[in-house]
Image 1 (tube, rainbow, N blue to C red):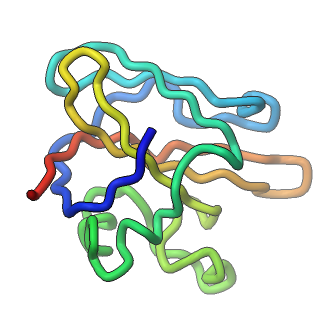
Image 2 (cartoon, rainbow, N blue to C red; image 1 turned 180 degrees about the horizontal axis):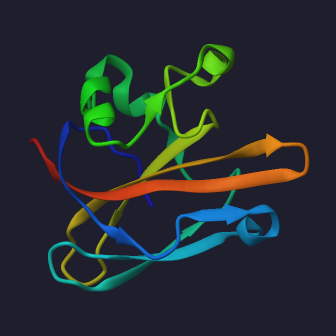
Length: 139
């Protein structure tokens, strides 16, 4: 799990086994798998609420990694509703949104995972993985 600081280009969306975890399903961590678009290897991802990931703002701030339009075009995030703008311009389900980079453990293809975690209503916390996308570095 790492942050991404260089420009990237999204190539494909990977297949994710499970992308929504409610309440205790996400504690102490949410564990799912994704299938590598390159070699077909099944990779495991573990997300620990309040520990895993980096703010999605770091990706689109000054278009350093990806532009807002690219994030929206690929369905990675949505525009945040007016009442939740304190979370940033772009979020997943109007919840605090984070990302991290990961690699296929077999062929080492690079992926970006975007997820949100927060209390949707009193007593209902949801961790939602927007998706996992294969990317190429633009260096």
